[in-house]
Image 1 (cartoon, helix red, strand yellow):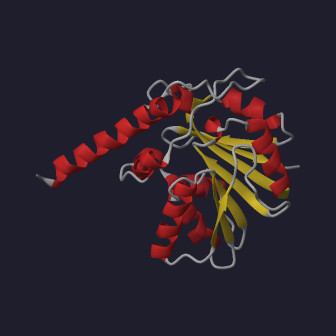
Image 2 (cartoon, one colour):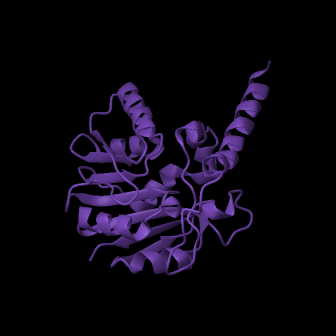
Length: 232
């Protein structure tokens, strides 16, 4: 079997996992709910079985994660949290950018994801990452500890978004930033299930209702909105 055909089979398997996993999780279970302000239906989160999709080789081209971090501006020595860190795709990038005097909290509600992160940061020799097991309504982060909380394609999966962003408000320092990347629901060309996309208006309405101030929205990434909010 050629390398090309092996990669093609891996890619089809990973994409199929992303499509089918929510169906397997939700079979016979009720919807996770709807947001009271926008009526948006919450998406089911990806499980560990779909984690390979997060590290797919083409993700760098499709999403340009390093450009996203450039637009955000990661300050060396800062304390940041990767909320819903998954396999640690952004955790490792953040750890390198904050440097040895900074700190990254890799937060997830699935212990299996945190084990993947532990393996990854161990292999990379990163010493500035702390793993934190949260719950669906509490990231379990220290108060007034964060310069930045980052959520990459995660917020739309929260089943208790108001409580979660409220807890993150407490975890951020005054002037700290809450940053969301979400696939553009306004663009039908973005090849993602609709419940895993959000509009600019949905994000603005939902996040500002928790006391955050919208600083700016970046639209230079191929598929995602990039929202930067601040805690006043």
